[in-house]
Length: 410
Image: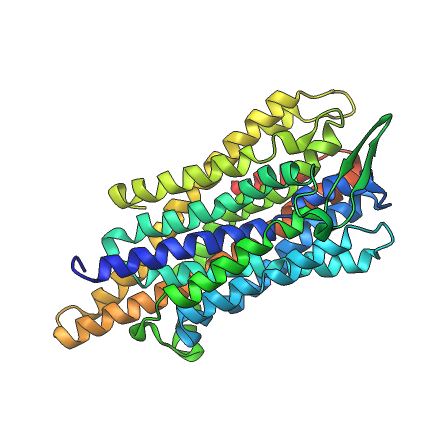
């Protein structure tokens, strides 16, 4: 480990992180794009906009179920390169689609579903990195990969509002749209929300293909990995991670549009990136802490009798994001320990060969569970923004959705 393995593990981790960051950026790009569509001439109602914000979560979560098992079948290097390259499809597609108000809503729905490629990548990325590090360092490594990868949500909500204000790609990027809000007008290049990621995706794909490694001992068929469906702790961790990561990614997807609908006078893109940033940093810190230790918003939301308070609303969301980050890290830290410990207990006293086989089996099961739990949790990226949209459409307020989240947390 000290003479060779550590350097290889770190190389793969530091290539994995930007690939995962870009995956999250593409997955959550609609959270920023939908806020601007009505102002450049697209006649979509609020519920249609929430559908666009929610659908990447639905497709991403579903793809994660399959991506969970891909690394042991194809190898981490090959699968990381292929899955990163797939991000080019939605990134380029969005760049062309937003340039014409005549683009059909069905095209936007398709592109929103394709953004799920970014969501699916998390499952395979975490599974892959878990194979490279020993038990005592898995929490920190997974915390870095996930936490800095999660920063992609904050990055997309910070970068896109900047790059759409200028013709970054010149004539190659297309003409500007006219953004209108009341008497205020300005030029906007919303296509840059997709195009800006293309060169970075291309470079990261090449880095993964030429710089990462496949681990022979990680090879396993789907049948070998399917044993996790018989493990009680797989389902317990799915439920816990749905509460932590599901909340993080769901609030990230819905926060900008929810802010715009609840506080129309506020420009949500000025503040939206801070929530995912807090959650991602809390996750990195939580991973390190977990290696050492082991694994009221409604008051401020507007209603019929209450004008609400944006800063109270914003502050409570920051606390929510912080809680999700720490919960994400501690939950993922538990998974490798639980499955390794259970297999080692079963092999105790049966000889060295059985103990070595237990370590291999524990690593494979933990990797599959890391991916599968992340898949189940990612459905939060669909249900949370869609719950906001449904609640507002039915009652005129987000309160019903928030009360349902409280019941789940209890």
